[in-house]
Length: 110
Image 1: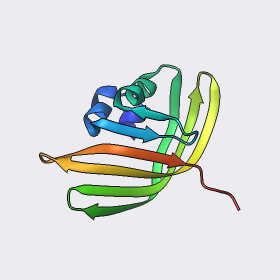
Image 2: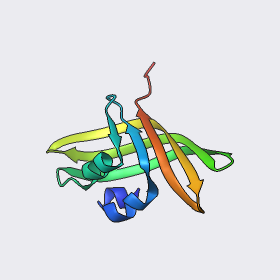
Image 3: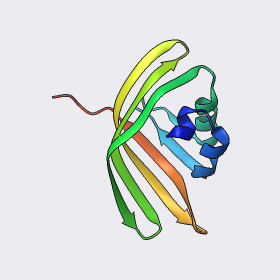
């Protein structure tokens, strides 16, 4: 989260699989290059980036992480304050964990 928040793209890139795919709340998707470009954008300023209520499930060399995600900042001068649920899929290959897929969704309010 710190590498993302501080735009340390080189560090962040080492965690993403080459075949990484992220799906966001609005249905848009990004591969590794697109996601890193977004994270590196000077139009993006992230003040808060935090996970909570995380649960990890291991299945061999695959880990599925679920939880709550809060991100606050501004993009192109427009403020945002997102409260999402997320699912991340990590795979371990050659002794290294890589993020393969992320999905973010806004919980329904009842």
